[in-house]
Length: 145
Image (cartoon, rainbow, N blue to C red; front, side, top):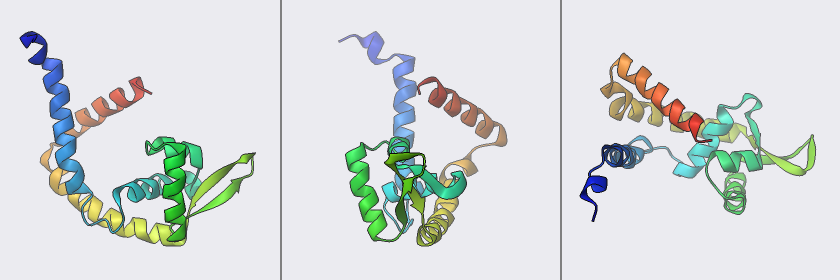
């Protein structure tokens, strides 16, 4: 084994990133009232102007295959949290639209989510640390699109 690579600073840094995320995710997604994946869909729709996105764009945003997302969207539509509307610009496409019930579920989930974020993430960081972390995360996201 190559000890130098095993103990490489880049490997350690990435490992810390993965470990921190793995520990934080269950803490900040606690008490949402909906499954994690549903919360991600509701959040994306809630933060999008008009509260609607093309199904394929939404599937990509929440890292689902189109088939997997279709099943997820079916369950959420059955629960009344989203609905599908035809895309007026592309007859082959559909839009996922946040319903009033979905907006209410998102509001309830966000109350718990923000409380947990402040307890386990942002409340532990200084203002300067938060700015640096945001800059770093945006740089990593944008460089790897």
